[in-house]
Length: 165
View 1 (cartoon, rainbow, N blue to C red):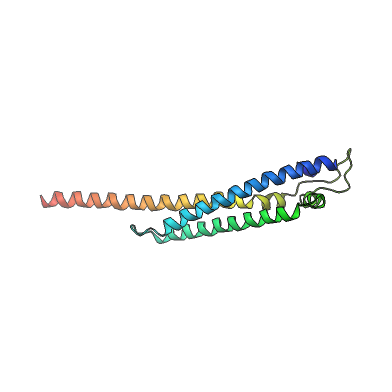
View 2: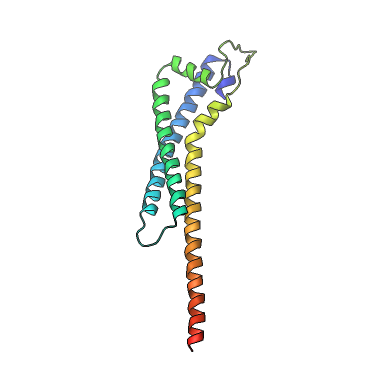
């Protein structure tokens, strides 16, 4: 990771590579989040079935998660573009992640990756994954409920027709 790299040129090159990879990831998250949002909106708008109230709540919670993911991904993308236009911005990015500016080639000083920064930069992906999981959970609940109702109806009909005969 570029945080522990004492050589300025190597650190900047590594940071630029990380920046490009992160921008590609954020772009992918933004597109995928938009698709997941449309899946939530379509599922919430189903008119042909009765959606359980708790499934509706689960899906609205997932919708909030995926919209937050889109917001954070676009915000981080804009921040990376604006922050890293120059070498000074790349150096500042390294400092945000925990690089000690006083590090020398033989001694990295107290350069340590900040876990809070890792968490913040992974937030869009985590929220996207959580929203997909929440969508599937709601879908499973809805399908199982429909299956249970259908099965109970079949059992009731079988008993009714057996009594009538």
